[in-house]
Image 1 (cartoon, rainbow, N blue to C red):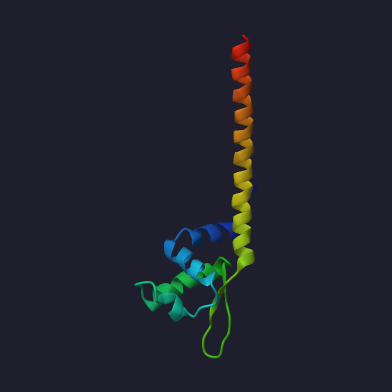
Image 2: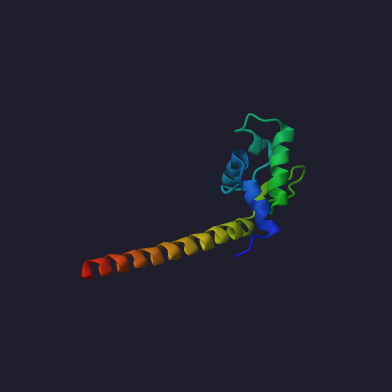
Amino acid sequence: MAINSSLDLKFAALADPTRRAILQRLAKGEATVSELRKPFQISQPAISKHLKVLENAGLIESGQDAQSRPRRLNVAALNETVDWVDGVRTLWNESFDRLDDFLKTIQQTSKEG
């Protein structure tokens, strides 16, 4: 399972707690920059930088509503990240299942011998 640059951008964007909080807010619905900025003690340029990172990663999209550009979550892009994590989880679970089977075989063999 190879990581592509799109996925790299998504994980880099998700690494920041402020950006994850922005995504959580957008999961509830569209919001303007000023609405997204309210819960944080950061400047307008700082929130704009976070939004740019999220947009470059494809995790959010800009809309057009008169004078404002509300942001919304791009669920499909977020699902790509979830799918990758699920794939890794499956590999680990299969590895642990094989290890468990191996240990049971060893225990059984030692009881018989």
